[in-house]
Image (cartoon, rainbow, N blue to C red; front, side, top):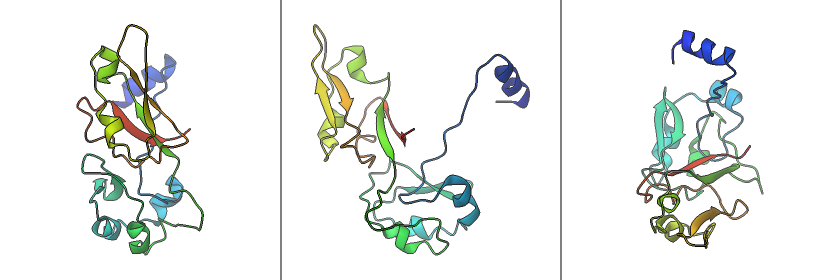
Length: 163
């Protein structure tokens, strides 16, 4: 979007807040992360599932098209700059799966592949009168691992930080 278009949208009350990219688990706050991360790629090389990408100007982001996060901590162990820090009992992040409008169930097509790939059973299907069962993400059970993303045929699922 050009600066002119961004200003025009702002004046019209259309605020577009770009979501912060999803960093590896246990990443520190975004501003501090960008200051600390040296973009060395050690976390990317250490990731056994190869989901860490450098498509954000060399900064690590997660690409769930390649697989899921197992929260093994190898990326944290490899991070020498302390941009990734794990404390005892600390959750890896507040990210959760969100199912969007492109979901096949929203178009009355039976599909349960996301639920089949969710090891935590965080995606359940709620019966709808006269229609296809709709997927529902249980935020309390969802770890944000991304296992449900790659198998989704319509790419209707995203993992984003909880607000």
